[in-house]
Amino acid sequence: LPISQVLSRSHGSSSALLSGGRWRTALAEMAVQMMSAGYLEEIGVAGSEEPKLLSSNPVPDAPPAKAAKAEEPPQADTAAEKAAKAEKAEKPAKAEKPAKAEKAAKPAAAPAAAPGEVPAELTKEQLASMSKEDRKAYHEARRAAGTQQAAPKKELTKAERRQIQEAQRKLKEDSKQANTDLEQMVADLKLQGLSEDQARQVALDMINAGPVEEVESDDDDDAEAEDLLSSVRRWMSEQEDKAAGATIDKDVLRDFMLKVRFQGHVDTTPPDHLRAILRVIFEKACDACDLAAPKLQPQKVAAGAAKAVSSWAPVLEPLYGKIDDVLVAADAVCKGVQEAVTAKGEAASDTGRATAMVGCFMALREIDMIEDEDLLTGCRRIEPRSKVMDKFIEFLEDALDEDDDDEDED
Image (cartoon, rainbow, N blue to C red; front, side, top):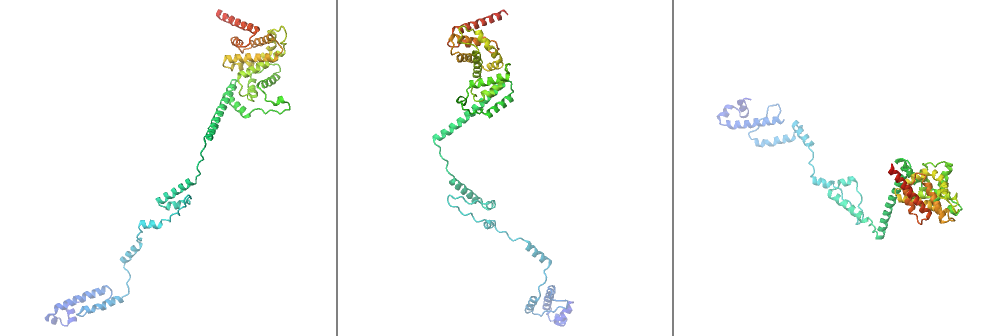
């Protein structure tokens, strides 16, 4: 409204107002009224109607305005206020302090175990929820309880320790001896023409087979364990029956190892085998002669033994070659002959027995087994020696001298 009209409405004529000097007061009241009306209109108290002018005293009029404001129904929140409330609602509640949260989540400690009692075993989840100190104490308690419950080891006496050491030593020696026997068997079989693999397989089969079971008999002699000579005599008789008068095959030496040596005579050696075979051969030769005859000639004994010696030559020659020591080989030959003559010439004189021995040596010279030089060495070692043996030694010496002369002429 124009200021003149406002003044006229509130204080009558404007000229009277200006003339009376009240214009300053009226102007201040008008400003207050205008401001109050604008504020009331902004907050929704005043409408589109013409604002009601306040009285000249504004202070008493303030309470009614407040009362009207109190009676006003709550207005809807503005967009800004809604956004603020939503943000406040979405803001997470302030987290508890770590120490308090950990303290709240910490499970109750496991009940203390009695002394010497193993603490109850906890699950992985329970151990994971425990603190480092609690886990350490838990494991230490279990270890301590386990140590206390473990039975103390029994102290061995000196005698017990010595017995254990002796058993261990015996086991090592037996194992070493078994390996030695196996290697010896393999070496013997390889000499018979077998390959390394074949010899080892045969040796293992013989060891695993074990000794031949003895047949029970009412005869006391049969019940006794068969010695090497008896085994050799039985085996030679079987081979002669198979050969039917023909020459013995050299492959029978492998059969000899299987049926004689490894059937109760594992500890025997090639000299023992050679000596036993020669004794069996010359016992039969002596049976065919009368050793007690007054004029027994060595040639007769040699002729009687020549066939058997020739038949067994395929076995005698390689068997003699397995003996590395010349003296041992010569002694084995001489002892085999001497034992055969002694066993069959009990009724004969010393001269008769010496004559039979010379005949046996002469038969052996016909096969490629022992050299004259080695045979001479063996004969010189025979004790006691008779005149017949001394003459045979001279014969061997002359034969060797002739061979040396023939070599010089060549």
